[in-house]
Image (tube, rainbow, N blue to C red; front, side, top):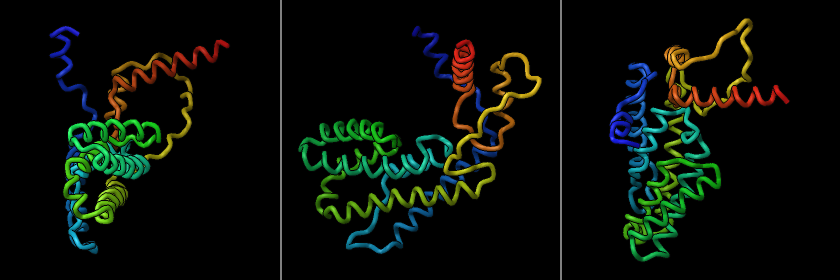
Length: 230
């Protein structure tokens, strides 16, 4: 990639998300973090106050700005976060050096999330938090640490289920798409401007770019043509 291409790649691309949807995403994230903070404050405390992980903010950005993303679905949220938390806790116990422990925790968390089909980017931050806050977590014990991990994870999911389904045009968790049907009398190839127009007609969040959609369409069309030729 030359310098000109690098600069061009930094420019924002076509944005199909309506301004009103961006406002809804910001308000939803505000409500999600506010309600989580209040819940953590008033839930029964087992000797030490429950705290909010910084990774919950990253999760809020994903859950409320891209709720239809595969990485924002319930299994990645719960499975990925709990798995990464346990990996981070284990690395903090087994590896004395925090830099090495943190890097191993993040790498192992990403690998295991991929393996278990629970990839959730904010969960990698949870693994690192367990290492960076090891002194506090070890001092308070595994019981409190587990309570904090479960509270952050379950509250994130429950609030996403409630808030997203209160917003018009959103369906959380993501629902399976109906089978594609060929339109009667359809002729001509779909072009990028058609994809861009279609995105502007969608009432809700579409977590994919028009370039990705064109690539998917091109691959699917090629595969269908090969299948038909057999």
